[in-house]
Length: 133
Image 1 (cartoon, rainbow, N blue to C red):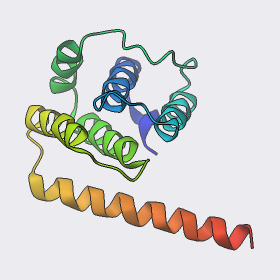
Image 2: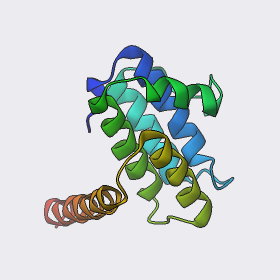
Image 3: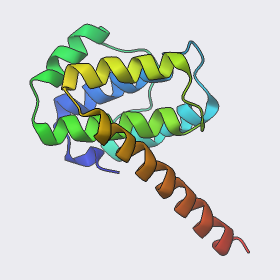
């Protein structure tokens, strides 16, 4: 949704973090792969090989030094990725907690974002039903 606003460096960080996020439960779903592919198209990056270029810790360090806007975009988009398959398992929640702690993101805001992402998904599905009726 907002990935084109990221700097080139942050696009690479986001791609790495999205790969780590998708692999956080040791199972990258087809839906998550499709989402990562779409993210690459949006960011005008080559098709991913689903292998992070930098360590998780290095990516978090870079993320910690970026703008607040970029932090918010990365956090929202990672949440969208992990919710793409409608499953937030314990390992994915643990991943989000690490990201949330590093970014000092408010817990209340996390729940608001998850709720908004679910509403957005439902709205898209509703429009798909109308279009395909």
